[in-house]
Length: 209
Image (cartoon, rainbow, N blue to C red; front, top):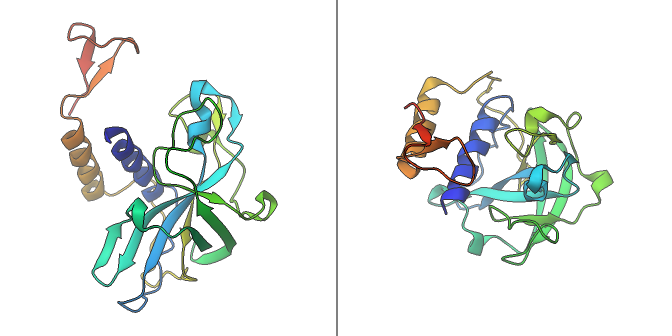
């Protein structure tokens, strides 16, 4: 559970920086809208695998219902979804996805998915991307891997930006404080270990608050 929460914190932080959020148009209050992330299958890149992940997936993240915006629950995600890929206030194209059975693995010998995911049905040649894979979007914090730029996908054709959001080199301090607070809530005694296999009181130093 903590691993999954940490993943979302890091991913949301990366999206609030160099990426542009294409804010959706305001649908009717009773209309259900899903927002997800077109992402690399980062779980493939274990053991410092070089290169770029072979597969791309959809990570459903949020949904809007008559009660407002919420984190999407895996049990409520439709078996198949048609998505509009949004970037910089415009549509890059349409893709379709289908559910992946719970507990599935990206490829034999790799770890389980960190979040609820759907497999992309659309051919890879027709799946939109922006720019070339870069270490800037690497699935791992460090190492020889490269990643494709994550993109926002919407279950309705909403890509306009009525509020005129702008690019930021880093999140505002108010958002950064919330991220730090959420991290400290889940990891109140996080340590930076000198060795990966063991982390004792005498062999580590606390990360500065």
